[in-house]
Image (cartoon, rainbow, N blue to C red):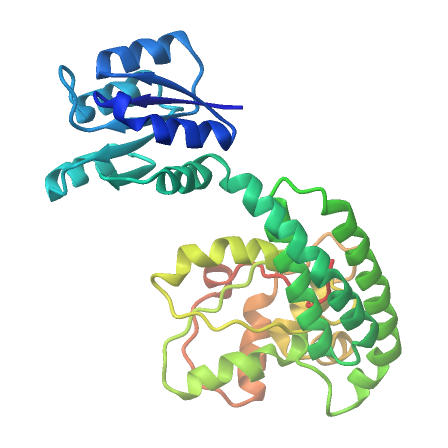
Length: 336
């Protein structure tokens, strides 16, 4: 049973509430003042305190301050007859879990307890149930995916559930891992089947050498200043963790593109900067091509590659040194 402490100088009037909570599986210890509440917390183990604001001796706010000092792990639900904004602000400022105004009925108390003591379990159960329902739909999407756009949507859905389940202490992780493996196997077959046509056809998806033409040049055509930031090996789930930190200060538009193969630096990364396929890059600019067995840094000519691409497309933009304005970005849209 969950152990909670209820401090109220009119505790005798709350017997119906206590009986209701007992029926719901809570073990409630009662005290009639703040000092006894603090003593009870020192002597016992409680996850939550229901705390009346108007009590003789120590007030509810004073008791709350001392609870936060000596038992910061204990959550506090403040219950008061007062609707004064100042009291409410002080209580909220002292990190209470909830604020209820009398008269309160047993169901209100119970719902607040569920929110503050059982939200993690409820969220986990809901997430597991939702993923079970979604599992079949994702499996069907994996089996029917016939385009890069289809695979990008599968990738987004898998990343969404990976993030949801990772924070839910769920037992669904292994099931999701198996589904990701199925997706990887099917995606590899898809790429093997389609890749040659992407290299020779006009209807290929956006790939590494197309990034500047597709995303950078249109922004420059609008006369806007542009920072191009490249971050290698940043997975979509990692970006989703960072995105909320940036959304308050930037308008974000998100898209995925498909890396060329191999995805190693001198291929996919330099292909992106040069706007060329690796064979074209090696033939057109042999002085900037670095083989695997050479000691030279594989991305030491990004400045020259960007400059050459701008010149080929007769762009006249003023550019800062790429080594100062570029870093590394993930270059794949498959589910890893």
